[in-house]
Image (cartoon, rainbow, N blue to C red; front, top):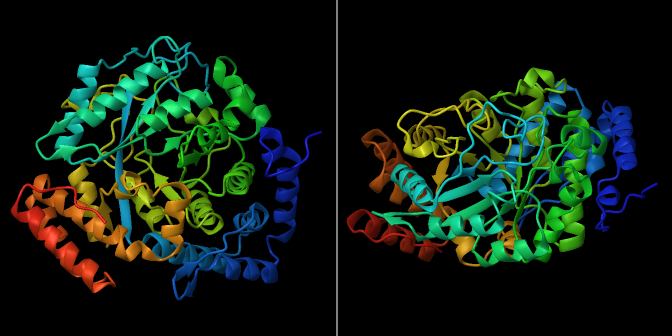
Length: 482
């Protein structure tokens, strides 16, 4: 029997089934232990120091106790602390990105995904490099600067060389004042050699959703194809880091397995990355199973309601305070708004989850990976964020300045966000307002910028940011960054 060891490189030891079961039993026995719960909440709080804020985070057991707790006032306190942590380390910035689907050819048999090999009703499509270029121009014309590319697993149709060609094409497109400055990659688990190639291509974060950490359920949900190999998939982040990729993004598809099991395992995975590589996940995503062609989410009996979903996000923020948290357009405007209050720091905007969807005037549904609940335009999303007192950020400075992995985390932990990320967000927002925004969004956005400039602590940084913003407004100069 495998023994739990967070420093092990074997999936069944760092995501240990027996340890998860013991954790869930401990959490259930202590879910009304108010003394313990208060101690855990106090440990989770951000502490102000001379150099910024410090947050201890929580172990998977401590966080699981909070998730199990059903005492209303304690849950409310979790939400309050989650918001405190988010503001301490990320401020009121919300990073914006869009997914770009390159190909829906796939050799896997995943039961929850319409791209599975046996689905004969969905049209199969793979973008040519000219079509990639057209999609990128369409995204740039909206105002996007950051993409997450997606592709099914198919060694014939989607080999690593195709992915690399697409990345090079994306970075090569300079249209009007538009540039895609960061390409994150969400493709199947691969080899150290291929991760090195992705690193050399200049990717940002490598993202791979675990879908479920429950090994038996994982193998049942992935009956055929290379993704069936639980260990190879679960150990992918270690290979990515061995290949030189500093920033990796975790995620669970909530609804496939019991959420308390998934939560404990997800936090254990974060602990494992910290223990082995000295830096936890750059991002954690929290998608839920959604309706799609050939997929009925009601067939999965572990679905979670909105209240539970919000609570999971808050507990992730308490457990892994420095990670970026992502919520996609799978979720409604209402749910996304609530998620911003409990720690989410990245949102997608105007997403199309079909291959070639951005160049079509009407939203296509025939090749969608999942239904999009929030169908607002990027301009509407930007204005919504501003009106809810969040700074929409198109910043990619840290990645291009080499502030990745532990270097980004040290910046985050040192409290330099207000002197670095905050002005970068304001400058990239100014770019958006000048180049793409509606008159209404431009008006509320410029008012926010004037107010937020005053929050930059260092006078010299504040004056440089002001001058850069004036230059953006009065010339075609772009891409200033600290």
